[in-house]
Image (cartoon, rainbow over all chains, first blue to last red; front, top):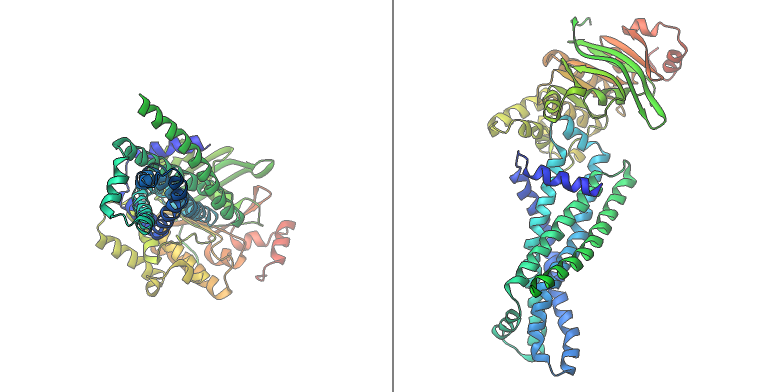
Length: 241
Length: 254
């Protein structure tokens, strides 16, 4: 059923009319509302993760590698993953609850009888917006995580921002950036599909609204972890080739 | 008040309509015709399939068997875009109003027009929305959100929203359900006003006898999945059928 739903999304994406204005509206709604949460969480995780990593590296006398290590960890994994998990919790559940409540109160039927395609307007536009917004939010999250990491390194070692930047960026290649963007695209798509799928297919009644929100988060998070595993293996394979 | 109808020009024609949900057979062979300019009230107890019938007419539900011809088109033969075209000619007012929560009153009414007429200028949309809000007496609520409106105001807004596409047929699902007698009378008057001012033919699904009496040219009784009686209000309710007596006892009209 999810597969059929996903195929319908891709079919409707390429079919006119294109509702760019609504996609931008949704991007703004999703992006702006999640931005403070993602920025602050990213900063804290960068700070804490650096703190936790410092001790083991010091025991090997490798604390000078802390900037390099944090650069790899944040850009390749932490940034996309934290963004996706937070978006799954905030955005996917929000979309699930919103669409389920629209279904329960016959607002989706009201669109249909007004000759408006509710699938295109509510599902396709939200999935596109979530995908775009997740990639943008990932950059913010990675940036604030790096700032958190830098704060910890500065407090411990009084390293300048230039040295930190050189250390962090020296270990990051073009493929790592591609990997982060690709991951975020897939995660964003997953978050959008999970929320819209559970909301659009919610059973009628108020119980259905709560269920749709919860199931949207569970489905999105599970899929994100599976996808992380698959995408990381795929890029490792590309690096070997 | 005697209303003018055209008995020779059916706008909706239903033959042998059947619909089941699992083991529950809701419609068991409904035959029904709505003529141009006519208001017909379909009466029946809850769960008799009244709302199912109009949801089949608008294409929200598919019938198991039977034929629905609306404005000369057999709805079963229509593809997606043809069905959408037909839907712009049929207005559907929902029982719970179904206004879009995230939009204010202006946006709610403008939305179907914007989505169906991409080339319409903002000025034309403004003009149409304000004309309709004036017609339903809600110009002062133009910026309010649905949550800020009363039940009767929501019903009026819902009717305005369906009228924005200039439909030829109006389908009202329980227009007076949950409203006080004064507000119900206002809605009944509005249904009559819509029939005359916008030249529509209407099906009014209700179990409110006052609504049926004041808004319809003809009454149809749906009982146990079939149409069991039809005619003018007085003809139908002078009948001594047992199911009608039951129905009477729960209304104040007699």
